[in-house]
Length: 168
Image (cartoon, rainbow, N blue to C red; front, side, top):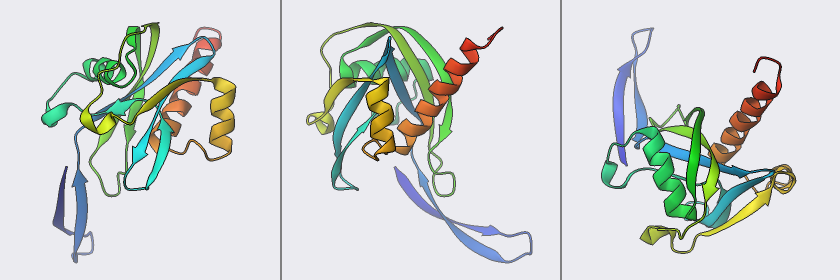
């Protein structure tokens, strides 16, 4: 991550300063099996609390990976799951008013279980299958509040709606 301040010129000719957080592109994966999704929980230092979210992350050392390859890597690393099928659902901008970071969202199905290969910072991570009803309840109650996970879930719901319509 880098943080920079850019001086820019407004339309009226005045100048201003814009603070920008540059972070690499990440992948977020919704692993789904029938009426369940797989989530991970970990301690999020800036919040001082543990949070449930969909597996997500960037490549180590700012390595450039194809989005689908990064998604497969993150899913296996955090959950041990391997996806037989991976479908791109969309792209998210994390905080476009202050960060350049973007994320690619994928739906993973045809899953095979295996051991996770977590990074050092992820050693306290937990993972679990959630029914869709349990996830919906947790979102309503504020127990799942990660904005990237919520936006990705919306992309999944739109994807499912489109597939259920005639000709979709």
